[in-house]
Length: 276
Image (cartoon, rainbow, N blue to C red):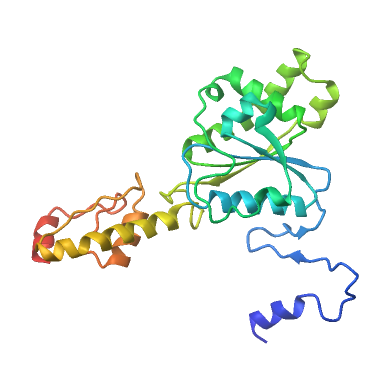
């Protein structure tokens, strides 16, 4: 029996089920995530927050939609924190509860529907203290951050300081003992939103595929000019210290030479390039 047949045989028999009864589906975890079975209502009563931060990247809205709907399926209440860390610091209208319809018809849209902003306040402890107070007031104990290097670094700092922030708020009588006990720990998940595809352990960061698509479009547009004038073009793409975009674009576009940080060119690269 093939691996596909084994998976199909394990699926519930929808045709044989009573149409009035609800079939409980469980999604089996992939290797390395054993025990992470997704069961409807598994996290009922929990409250989570979601925000996008830093520069926007294509695909953020798809991630927002998936997080909100899976969170609701698991029974959690999901709050979207608008305008990134700034919205977390400001609180109030920037922290809004989401439902199934909140994230309808957003996959095809660019940017991020819940907004993103640079936040100087969050870099200071006073700003992080205010952000913690706003999260505790909403009962948020789980946080999902979609962003790049700076955003994820900020999230990690926030996590490390959380217990101290809670104690400080309690001593200042800004939160109750009950709130402090309920929110004594916070779980933070980071999803990389960066076209650079430079995060170890991630197959494809949000925005990378679209960036590669735009690169191929741009090069296709100038290729005819290069042939017409018998010229060679040197094209620089983004990626910072990661050569993924340059390498993938070179393979897709049949480039003659590719320079990437991970593989410095040989000393005689000019001779090789001219010979080609």
